[in-house]
Image 1 (cartoon, rainbow, N blue to C red):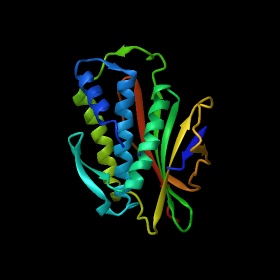
Image 2: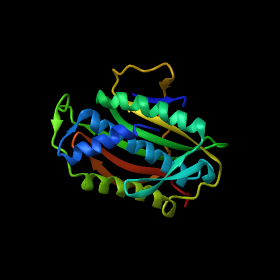
Image 3: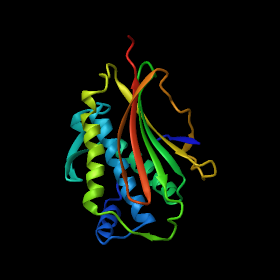
Amino acid sequence: KELGSARELGRESLAQRAMATAQKQAITLKGSVAIVTEFFGYSVNSILYQRGIYPPETFKKVSKYGLTMLVTTDTGLSEYLEQVLGQLSMWLVNKSVQKLVVVVAGQESGKTLERWVFDVRADKQAEGQVVEARPEKELTSEIQAIIRQITASVTFLPLLDEACTFDLLVYTDTDVNVPAAWEESDPKYIAKSEEVKLRSFTTKIHKVDAAVSYLAEDD
């Protein structure tokens, strides 16, 4: 099942507590969810900035993961991301999320130009358990690698030569409760595409694999 929302960022303190817990060599399901949700928030912001979906002047610099990140200052976009990530977090707690997809499409043509896919795998046995955590330095290093690849995407992705919009799709298990603001969506596949595999990270409870597909240029 794949769902698209009609329109958030936060959870900083919970994710920070989860990282702190990880330093103590233990992590809970909710702590892992906080880390993954926060990662998605920063990743989506990075994609929107790097691919020019929103004007660069509508982003501010923040420090995260030992990197300088860019986060939107657009109120409407912030509220949208907050709503989506809030719902995503609840589905992650229930281990119902299969993937998050950021779709970039041409505003005029309506053609899907890029699909940023984050596959999610959850340890189904982790319910209520405290799992031995990975060292924070290792986890942060893996997340850094993905963020750096998103930042470097302008060097290997084709130029977006038209104004673009974006959509967020969440693939879930078929038995999840779906809020009224969400609806089933088509997958917005790219007919003729090339794919670049990105890095992955794991909290030991959740593993996230990343990749980006883009519209192949005609020969």
